[in-house]
Image (tube, protein in one colour):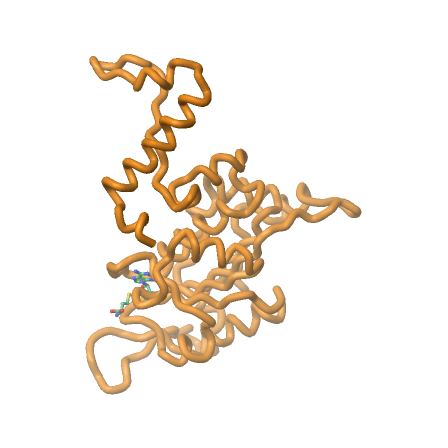
Length: 254
Ligand code: SAH
C-alpha cells in the first residue's frame, strides 16, 4: 500500500480548480520525498500553502521513502563505508522514488537535495525555482545521504542557512513556502509579495504599524496618519533604505 498522500485534499482542489474547459491556472508541482511524511504534511495543511493547494495553484505530493524499499523491514539507511558514526540514507530507495515520480508526474525541472553544503536559499534562488514548474525535494536524515544521490540524481543542492538541522523536512518546508509565495495568486494581494523584504529593489521592508495610534506612550510616526500618500510613500522608501543600511549593509553592495 502506498503512503503517498495529497497535501490538504488535492481531490477537492482539483474539483474546484477546473471543470472541463476551464483554463488551468499556472501552478507549481512539488514532490517531497521523506522518511517522516507527517512532519511535512501538517504544516502544508495550514495557512497560505494549504489555501493555494485548494485553489489548484499548488499540486503537492508527499512520498514516504520507505515505500520505495524492497526488503521486508523497509530499511532506508546503512552504515557508512570507511566507518564513522551514524547512518547514511541508501541510494536505491531515493533513485526508485524519483523514477516513480518521473513516471507518474512527468520530468521535474529540478531534483533538489536539501543539504547544509548546498547553494544558500535566497529570494533570487526562490525566483529561479518558481520558474521551473515542477520540483522534487529530497529530505536527508542521519549523517546525510549517499553521495551518488547528490552526483547522479539531484540536479542541485540547497541549504537554508549555515547551521545544521536534523533532517531535510524543515528545509523542504522553507523552500516550498518561499517558492509558493512567488506563484501568482498564492498570496491574495500580489502587491504584498512585490513589497516584501528582498523583493523590492533588494531592500528590507519598511516598518509597519497598526491601531492603536497611541499605545503605552508609544506613538506611530505622524506621517502615516497624515493621509498624504506621496509623503507616506517617500517615508517608506527612506525607511527601507535606512533599515537596509543599518541591519543589512551587505545587501547594498551586491
Ligand atoms: N552530516 C551532515 C549533516 C546531516 S543533517 C553534514 O555535516 O553536512 C541531516 C540532513 O538534514 C541532511 O542530509 C539535509 O538533508 C538536512 N539538513 C541539515 N541542515 C540543513 C540545512 N542547513 N539546509 C538544508 N538541509 C539541511
